[in-house]
Length: 234
Image (cartoon, rainbow, N blue to C red; front, side):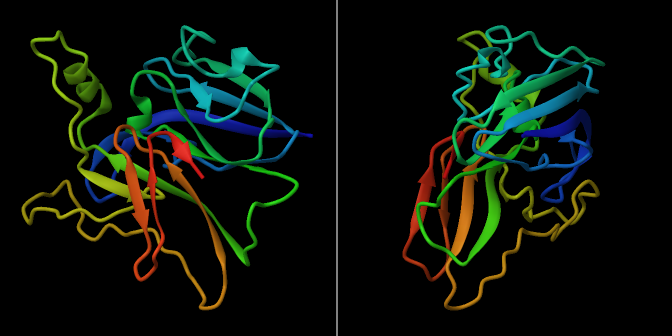
């Protein structure tokens, strides 16, 4: 079976933590929509680039044995998708589990161009009562991503270390301590919420969708914690 999706990539002002900034969205939403398929399915994603720069999407964690040219690394596996153009990716869901997709062009992933991907398999590696779905853990920068790239990729005498993120998001949401006189920041923007019932076991599909740092995830009053390296998932 082929699972088909249509993505329109564009820029707009977003404020996932209450701070207004230019971000990259898919179908007018941040984070991007969840891709779901069964192991062995084909996935077809038609991407329309409505930005004024190129782009390309990488499907993280898939082997692409039959379709190396669909891997989404520009200038290696494909040409970037030009502004105003469309390109259809078609590839096999050759592994199952939780992963994500993200831009592989410049640092667009740091600007918001990413989303979760779930490929259902024949069995799970643990028993649980309820699947809570993807939990995207992201570092978040208020400066535009191309300004960060400019600093990091400057000549050696001018280059700077990657900056510390301004915030961390869970499923594209978090609060930020706005200054009282800052009209571009909305306090108490909202956080991601999950409902748990005592005595039940839950699956959280943790995805490190951060651009730079490792993400440490823990649950209050629980012994377990996880440290996820960049572009990782569970």
